[in-house]
Length: 476
Image 1 (cartoon, rainbow, N blue to C red):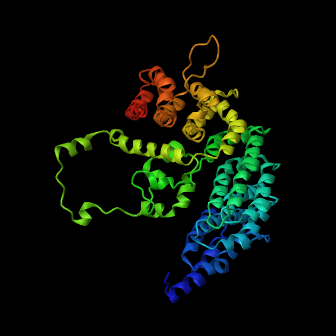
Image 2: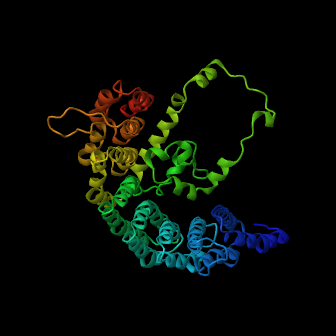
């Protein structure tokens, strides 16, 4: 990249110096803005200059121990938290090649690991949240010998808020391991080891957090259990984005634009935006209006006017169908690792299914957990596939629809409305994954009995909007 020498010197010698001063401000909003500016500036300067001009700022903050005159109590702690957040952002930039990965190995990783052992639990919590970003820019050796042991220790921290934070980070840790395994320089044998680390380290951590003595830790892990299970789907394999509607290998469609992200990958929105950072830039660019371009108004035919008058959900059905077909085809060509599937079935699926019939004694909490279960359900079905429908997957679905399912001599019960909304909106996606026979056998009877005209007008409308897609799913 060609840079103006005079302007570049102003940036690295003057602008960065001002930001380095502002990031030490006692006002939290000023510090946050300065931190964001430094993170956004890093990819735009010469890669060799990142470690010289930008990295020393958060490293110095992480070691700040002298009280600043006039600063409030705990100010040094706040600086270390800001440092951890900035280091995480810089690691994310290294993960996608915007700054050298040597910066992570030589400077960022050791600083974040030091913050993982900080006396303040708030600093340790911030360091835990930074570890997934750091992991994606390191090597197998660093991940196995340094980062994963530090993450395990934080998952057993004495402070419950730190443990809860590690549960919330499990999804990103899982995806970061796969991103690391997908790098070109990683050997095939190392890829196997990285995938094994998810099964042998992350799954046991999730199980321990689900059994934690503190209810906030348990409930936090329950909230992220579905997305964590979904993270085992081989999202990077087979170039899924390139086969979505409107996408090519050279110009892939994002899962957000195709509407597929929320249906199958509730865990991946932040990860996808990091892997396709240009999408954010393009989305934020202003779209020229016809008046700006001085284009004469196009005269619409009667058919085009009719199409524009149709509800959005009718016009979007075709795109949704193509997206669903692309995802199901992607799974057929790139099936999940059977070792992952077996590990999920044997160790985590039972915990996920229990969310559908959880009884904590608090009705609001129970309803909330069932919503989390219903929201992630299509992603779990996609991972495990129709071959694993009978048993826990089917029981989970039926229990979400009818909380009294499998209880003898008990009438059918109506699920909470938010749960029913989630199920109504995703019924067609489950049907596409399961295929014709299972849909006719198990899904359509549920549709007729529970969604077509019963109880709540909203869920009936949502389900009827998806009815054309459900019909397509049952057609050979």
